Length: 555
Image (cartoon, rainbow, N blue to C red; front, side, top):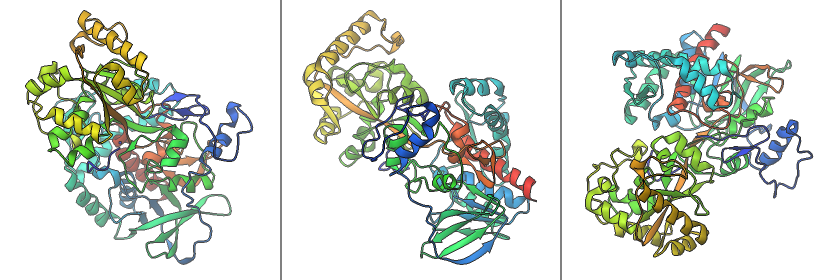
């Protein structure tokens, strides 16, 4: 992922709605021209429809001029990892598969993703590690407040090793990293596209077809209500009807549809996913009768990004340009919300998911506060000068090369440029900084004084931050770094059973309609994305399992 494509924990609609990771917060419907008729929880779907009325991509056109009809056993819409794995696995079972991709290449977001959490893969066992998956399953369910499909979670966790090992059989060289969550890194970025290409060339193309730069427009319904294919339009505007016994939605969610994210989630965050993921697959499925799950609004908020990074990269080398971002992952500083009030133990930044979830409670951003005293320590001895004894966990694509004791040269110039660019704030006093950043001056000044007193005492009575991370800010001037939510993708939108069949409002399968990947996350998460690496694990595994089950059902 290029640095300019900024933006990748989830929160979701729970009950009626959720915003900022909070259940039962009802967003405004102003501007829609409609008001919900009722506040009864049973009427959540109609209220959601109102919210989304102007946000949907409008991709269910009935007036496509169909110029050609082709017949297949399975059509997979979307050729990211989940869609490609589905297509390849189904083709291996002897099915004739059409793979439809909006862009010009295979792989989707997996080309820039990092690593799945995969217990008991051959790569883990080669490293001498075996894992009891039951605690993983139970903690996942509990962290989702039990409002999930427990059977689907169990299937995913216990099948992910088979999925990864299957990919390994086709040339994928994973690297077991562990990191407390069986994290297993994907091959290097530039290796993945050719690996997907080779799998599709060997298994899909001989009897099936791949349609690049082609957009699915609407599902084809048979007289009995089952799905019998999909109408697509190529880059020349030519309509083609692809008939099939099964259609798989693998279109990656709606994270790039800012209006849709805001309507469902409450704020946009900074999107780091793919620009083509605007919710077309969801709209087609809903139009065909798929239910909208109560946790539709889920987003994978994952760590934070500093708003200043892109502009600083135009003026400074890679390492100094990322000073503000690095500090957003440091526990030894002060974090406050938009009002100036501290909102967490900053030690939560040591774990990406809790860090993002706790920040989401504040909205789309929070402030990281740094003093001139701290900057002097950084300039002299680097992060070691602040007492930092770990490598801050930046996303791999953003992480510069440096050591903890590398002096932060030109730090004042960097922070002054951040302020000049309007990507952060400065104040000689706490009150000055508060006024510049739009915080409440009284609240922030009191919070700063209270925090420094806690650091002197070595005890954080406010949030219980470990003493090792309590570092007094000291004298100003003070700087506020704007740390924004990094939204990787949307979660949910469709409910599926353990066979990946899409469910209707009665929670019954729609015959012939399936979904995988992000589109099928509605049964895995409630109000939060709960685990580092689980997203990529679902992407890999759902495609592998869906293709397998299609082979069993249709062969």
